Amino acid sequence: MDSFKELEDYHQMMEKLAKLVPGVIYQYRLYPDGHSSFPYSSPGMIDIYGVRPEEVTIDASKVFTRIHHDDIDKVAREIQLSAENLTTFYSGEFRVNLPGKGPGWRWSQAHPEKLEDGSILWHGIILDITERKEAEAVRKKYEEQLNNSQKLESLGVLAGGIAHDFNNLIGGVFGFLEIARSKTKDEQIRNYLSQALSTIDRAHALTHQLLTFAKGGAPDQKVDYLFPFIQDTVKFALSGSNVSCRYSIQPDLGLCYYDKNQIGQVIDNLFINAKQAMPGGGIIELHADNEYLGKNHKPHLEEGQYVHLTIQDHGAGISPENIEHIFDPFFSTKSTGHGLGLATCYSIISKHKGLIEVESEIGEGSTFHIYLPVTDKPRQEEERELDDTHQGSGTVLLMDDEPAIREIMKGILESFGYGVIMRKEGREAVEYFKAHNNKELGLKAVFLDLTVPGGMSGREAVEKIREINKEIPVFVVSGYSDDPIINNPREFGFTDSMSKPFKITEIAAMLNRYL
Image (cartoon, rainbow, N blue to C red; front, side, top):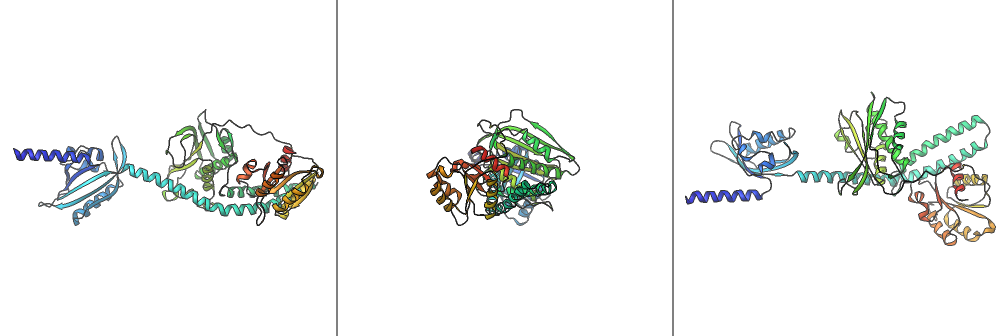
């Protein structure tokens, strides 16, 4: 009796200890005829495989129905190798699918011994590693997004410099063509010049796309509803195609703080890609609703309310090896693609403090998810269009390091009735302003180039001018169209801003606002 009680006490102690161990402690026996069982398994078996220990004491087959079909062969091979060589069984990480619980991840390790009848008996442990795998997946996604951001930042240094120089060059061409068009009375020549200006406009759109990558660039944002603006953009993107869009839009979508040009570019890119993915035609589905995201619910996103856009096509889909690189700059699966479209989308949404994600399955299509933060700021009314002609008098001080830009601006300002004093860099402009800042000379306004290689910049010059005169209109001009100073000039002491290349009507409208 004492021996029986000692054995029972020992068994109870083992059961108590087993309950303290995460996962399941087990013995697994493989018989010479291929039959297998779990002679012993702790209560954790129900959590690990969704079976009770007594269900697999004689026959282990129920456990193997729980292992994911793509991983079962790998686990079986490891068991066979361990049995043949009497080496430690190490399953690595494998997936399970439990009734009522769904998918999960497991890890197992066991040590074998050979019994007299030729059976192999393993003593081991199985752990539930689902939470760790999910955390790794989130971390991997975060690292991929951080890697994308770093790639875009590196590209931005190059893109910003190229686009700035290009804007200066086409700014000169654009301005002279506009002046020529305004002077000629020959309708055929005017038509040719208009077509040339239209072509340059498209070139400017490309530089604007490059500048989206520029480090420190900021969108020109206003508070407004996303719809019907997005619907108008989609209509234009799908115009003339055999693809249509089906909408499902929550009626009370929140207001967003966004740049219409940039978000329009995102929608345009995504719908053109979706259209190209369905050459035989079809329907793209766009869903929009409000969604509250909790803390750490999405990498990079703060807790709060978002507008969630879902754009789903029914095309060929994206392969797993390509989907990891889909937002990389210059990555494209199209022979004629330049690889900037989706990278631009990623950069734009990131700068709006949002998130863009993609999921896809070969043969089933692709779905893009966009999250844009909802704002509690009031909606901004559209600005009234100003007159595109201007007449003035007096003197304007103009500083730009590019001779062609100086000559174009001089011609335009003189056509408005102003005398123009030109300087090449900020220090010269400030010295002139100090010497001639009086009403008798009729100095009406100052135009400053933002960046001057090797000289005083417009940003430095305006600080010195404001020390002398806080009222005179000072306008900043730059080829960096998405520089923070261009988008928020008043925060840096300027009255307003203008991007190169500029139109005569844009200068006229700006002067009408302040002079």
